[in-house]
Amino acid sequence: MNMDTYLARLGYHGPRAATEPVLRELHRRHLLTVPFENLDIHWNRTIVLDETRFIEKIVDERRGGFCYELNGAFAALLRALGFDVQLLSARPAEAAPEFDHMALLVDSRWLADVGFGESFLEPLDVRRRDEQHDPAGVFRIEERGSELMLMGEEGKLEFFFTLTPHDLSEFEPMCHYQQTSPESHFTKKRVCSVATEAGRITLTDDRLIVREHGVRTETLIAGEEAWRETLRARFGF
Image (cartoon, rainbow, N blue to C red; front, side, top):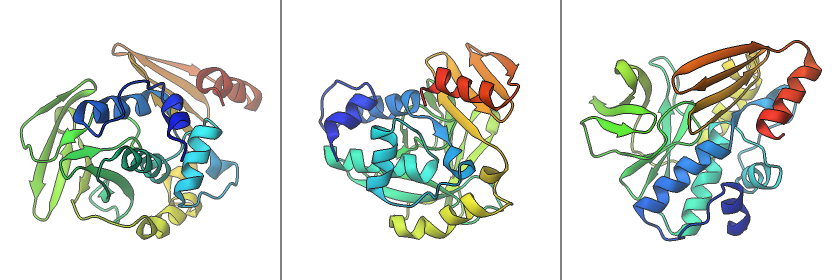
């Protein structure tokens, strides 16, 4: 991995030490720069669980990805900087299977996740059970049996997770399911979404959704060419 090009992709020019402030800024920059998107699935391009391919897509092709790609690449960057990083299995819903989502545990303390779409902008402390205030809102980690629950605004469930470390290969069956099954929400519609300093920009199959300072606007997109032009203009693809 060329660390210089990855950090340049994020617009990060600060220290390269394995410290909490560096982790926080890299996490925030990743979410503000690299989109959450599933476009390869709809362009019939197979997504493989390979760190080199993750980095090539995000850095060299200036694309985004979904959780396995985004968190997989971010984990590689953090390890190169000297952080200890473990891959965590997470479940966004009660009925969801293991490995439905990937999150990260950094230095046995910080919950990091740059691949969930709209969520916390800076890492959360997994040791705390009180409210944690983040630029994106208030979050809380609660215990439920052998699992932990990440709760967001107004008690909304973000996902269940455990602190058990996993290998990247263990996520392969669910990665295949997510991009091939008609039951997967990733195969049902296109989405490309990125956080901004003021909110979030999201492009779906037929509309552009912009939220700025709590105000949400939607613009209908008519036709494939208009959709592709919006993708180019808003996300640089």
